[in-house]
Picture 1 (cartoon, helix red, strand yellow):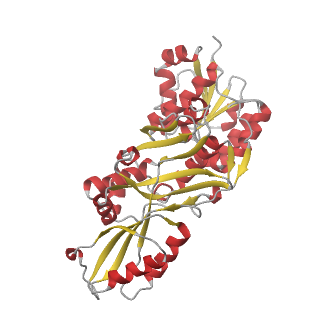
Picture 2 (picture 1 turned 30 degrees about the vertical axis):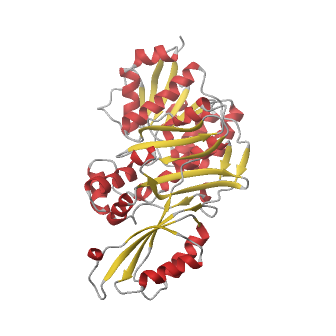
Picture 3 (picture 1 turned 120 degrees about the horizontal axis):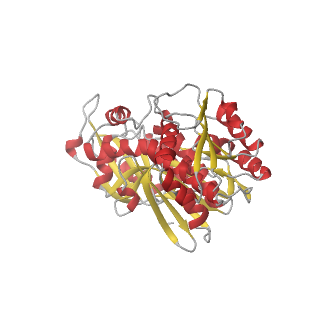
Length: 427
């Protein structure tokens, strides 16, 4: 019944909630872990007198976590520089590590895991991806018998909230973002969320775990949602789709197709029904087929729940020492993607424009699956214009870029053409 002694770095929203869970659920955690999990030391840049730390010793010096009464360091500082120092120091001292830091792992995970392996210590990172969804444990243990071929899903709650608000409440992007900020779902500077960087970091972690490989994070293709218009949402719904911000990774013979971008998802697919700040991750195994995991992806309590889950595993002795990746795989981005495409073409309201558009697509041997064009959609300006909405059949990425460029050069097309890929989540 020797307790697992925890040193906590950081007392922000997640850190304070971890301390609360360890205190309030101490008896339950002890029963599930087989021994007590005790918070013995806390280090934070500033004191937080409103947080009950029980018998834990508090210090503003992060080096205090190197004391002999700490078995595991929980890093909840965020960022890369100081957090990396805390993690490296802990591993060097033979301490286990639990972290929720996706940016750190996406950039330095290979180095951290290799050092931990050499030191014989465990690294828990369940909280780094998809908050309260136990996707890391599912990939590591529940699907251990499977070769994972593909992983995809919604891994950023802020973007999903904004797209849901646009679809369900008819809000434009700016208003939906302002609401997300007011509710605490988006930061004052929302760039990491709405431009896809946060999702790309999480996808890189999941892909590395799923494919037992080191993934080139810089090679992940990244697009955000700031260019999605409320009309795109409405037209997509009319075509039988929802627009979701997805991370998709698939294995190929020459590397990993890794991409983050908005996509049209058929309404019949479960991921298309995941709304608000919820996350959803689909993993496709060669034995079990597709599996889907849905739950809260962010927030103090879900993230703290994942941190404590790693501590319970560590206390049981079931949190593994990380093994070096089997291989290094280049990220292929979107270059090998072949999928249908949604096009919104701003066309001058005059006869013959649609025929010109159809002729361009025909030259590229791209068929039109569906069209939306209404007279009442005419805009005013220098010349009256109307959006032509087209859903194409499958076309390779390079072909799609080429025909969009040619369409933009037509005399009857005015303004920028919007293109959104249609997601194939069958495998």
